[in-house]
Structure formats: structure tokens, C-alpha cells
Image (cartoon, rainbow, N blue to C red; front, side):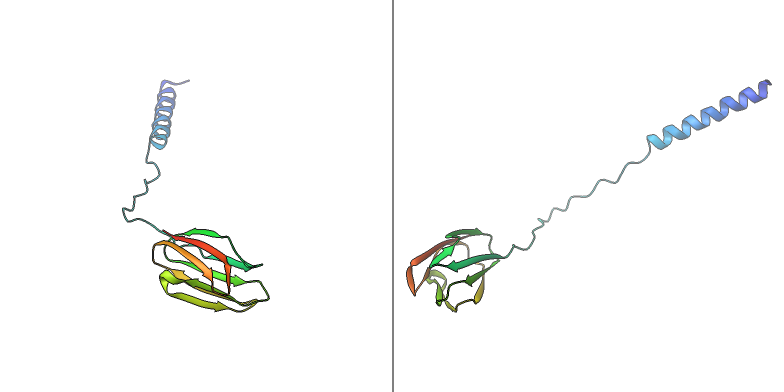
Length: 124
């Protein structure tokens, strides 16, 4: 082999090694920037079933802004009464009614037609 061929081979290997090292040590994926504003998603809608003269569930904790649907699965008319919030709504058989709760607190929910029906609603 000629001396110039060996020199060219050594230079070529050095260049390839440099290119490999530069690629391996090069830039990385960009670091995502943190958004200091708190990201919040809309509250998930919830349901309460009125069946066999009971609210199901009988205790519900939700974030403020949640829409709650009261579904009457009984053949009798029911009522959603939340005195602290001035809510008083009749729900006919096989019908539903929804309300979005924005006031935080713990609320007693009752049915004026059946005093045995009660629910504790906690809005955080």
C-alpha cells in the first residue's frame, strides 16, 4: 500500500469518527416550557339517579362548576330541593333535570314528596 493511501484512510476514519461523535453529542429534544398558569379542565358532568325512593349515590363530592343531572327512574314524580341554594324542582317519571353547581359548600338535598329521600352534596 502506498503511504498516501494510508494517510487518506486515516483521515477518512478520523472524519467519520468526528461526524459520529458530533451526531451523538449533538442537540437533544427541546425541553418543554412550563406554563405557570394552572391548567384546569372542565369538570366532568355527574348523574344522580332517583329510584325506589332513594338518591343514588346518597353522597356526592364535586368540583365547583360541575353539572349534575338528576334522573327520575321511578314511576312517581320526585322533587329536588336544596333550600340553602333556593333550588326546588319537580322531576316527572322517566325525566331528568340538570343544574350546574357553582357555590362551594355542603348542601342537604331532599325530596319534598318523600322525606325519606336525602342526599349530601359537597361542592369544592
